[in-house]
Amino acid sequence: MFKKLSQWNEKVSLKAWGSLDKAQRGQALSEYGVIVGVIVGVLVVAVVIAFRDEIVASFKAATSALRNAR
Image: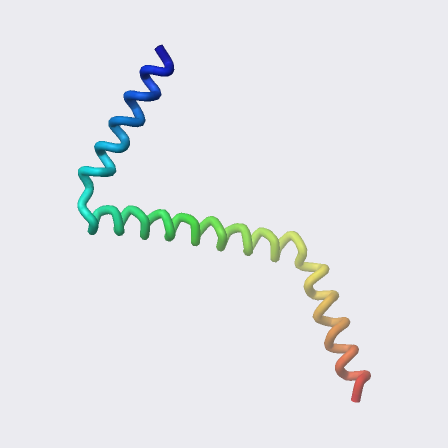
């Protein structure tokens, strides 16, 4: 029963995708791109917050190394 349901779902999905014209497919892909961009942005912010102290320490070390190199 589940196999038949899965096959039916696949057929319906393929027919729905085929019924979209080129502009609608492009819009769907651009919406997925926006979603991926938002997720990446959230992850970058989370990493910066999580490693804030390490990032600050590495910049301070680099600054002091450059000042001592004079």
